[in-house]
Length: 448
Ligand SMILES: Cc1cc2nc3c(=O)[nH]c(=O)nc-3n(C[C@H](O)[C@H](O)[C@H](O)COP(=O)(O)OP(=O)(O)OC[C@H]3O[C@@H](n4cnc5c(N)ncnc54)[C@H](O)[C@@H]3O)c2cc1C
Image (cartoon, rainbow, N blue to C red; front, top):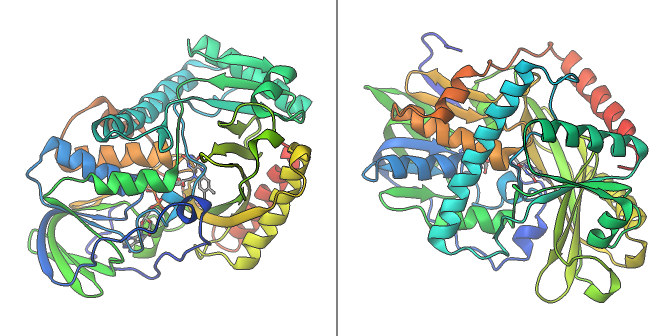
């Protein structure tokens, strides 16, 4: 993806907030690190303080603790998509691509597992070094849940694939999943033990807090442009600048705002609502569990035990927003869907309202590969999360850090085998195609 002689890259847009997530709202306010207000020098500048940027900073610091790393977050750490998600750091591909599970898809499965488990290994190391408790980081595993015969069939097929790959898991019948969730709505489930469940805003805040000097984090500091300067790059922010030898672009879809990966990223938002606290006695089952849907476009559900009352999180609905921003009306519309999904699953909680609603941006590629690699001399991208950034972007950030330092590892090997993101059709075809595709898949997911 060389861009020839281009020397200056200017951000055409900056991230916008998409509501306040329940994860942030239920934490004490955070005092952000000061914005950059001077001219500084760095060995590596990282643009973006989500999973990718934070993990890149940690990995650089692990590999060379003397490295001067400057990490720039346009907003406040935890208030972007990384702190707004459902909190699954997933260790296994959702599904295996080909029906007959051929040799090629087995290889892809193994690569994907290596990538996802590398992310979990870094996250687990941070958790154990810094004493993060289970409310923040819980390696408790995940349920996949079905609500239809099609969902049941999907879980059975997935179970067969996991068995073939020697991956531990357990299929649960309707009554067994009811015993976990307190809901009669689910028809079957599949438990896999390797996923870590996080409070995402607390997780990214904590990952930022434990960055070690000379890594420095600047919040409310969007990078507005970068240009070649000597052997490196000069990055400009509203009130300062940094001369850096290398850059890691860890701003997901906003890589395109700097002109990279044009027509290769699909900017898709997804949405969540979180209830007010309710009396735990009103709902049977475990007081803490986390479930992804059996069908890809279905609904994610979590029960969160906050010490006092409990809450339910519902995540559902996808929308294609090429401008990387959404309206309050889109959040309200998704909220209506969440209310219906919640009522259907938890009639015992009639009258419990949603307290928080929000959305968040993701960057997908048509061929499901990351937007990764050295895209200009000394500029490395760790973008294109494909909707699973807690693991994918963490791994991409780690691999980008390793590439910056010329470090060889199995993880770098996986990334070197991945294809580049394919070109999307010109507009308006991409918009029309994406909208029809999302609507069709949402319809197919039905009640799931
Ligand atoms: C409701 C919801 C539920 C989800 N659930 C899950 C889940 O359970 N598991 C999972 O794996 N994924 C989930 N996702 C997806 C996940 O949140 C994303 O994949 C992830 O946040 C991507 O991480 P990232 O670091 O690549 O990008 P981001 O988290 O988007 O971080 C990029 C950062 O770059 C910053 N930035 C952008 N431009 C600039 C600039 N010019 N200068 C400085 N900073 C800049 C942004 O402010 C942002 O904070 C969910 C998403 C949503 C919205």
